[in-house]
Image 1 (spheres, rainbow, N blue to C red):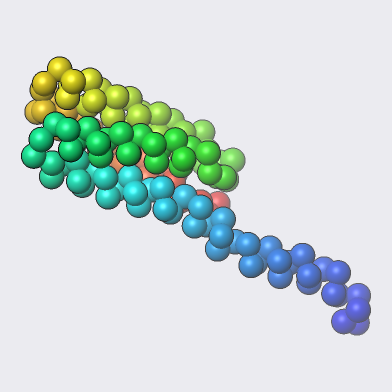
Image 2 (image 1 turned 180 degrees about the vertical axis):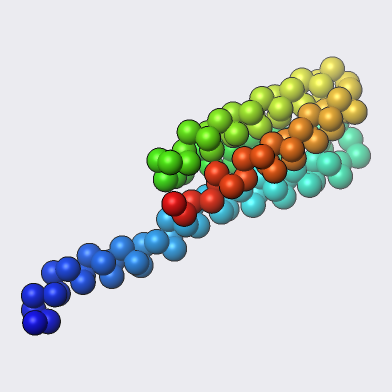
Amino acid sequence: MLKTLRPLLLPLMFGLLTLPALAGELEQPMKKIGFNYKQALKADDAATMEKHIKEMKAQLDIAKEKKMPEAKKAKFLEGMNEVQGELDASLAALQAGDQEKARAHLAKVNDLKKEYHTYAKQKG
């Protein structure tokens, strides 16, 4: 009986071993985005704020490339694109010398996080 079940159990066991790796694929870029978001908000000068926003954009690009369940991928990418738009607007405001406007765009990023965060979860 074990010989007949072995071909079925082996792929199942391999699949279970790879699930944690898949689940964690998005975790690191998202954590880095969150860290840089907090650092950008704390920044006292435009140059530091700009550095952290650019790092957020880089991690955003990495996150967009990660594997996602098809049921969530479209909404996830929609949210990431909206975040990217706010980050671009924040950078433009910084380049224009308007830190308050840049911070307002960062606040919108936080609102988008609240709206789209459930789509970042990779299970089902």
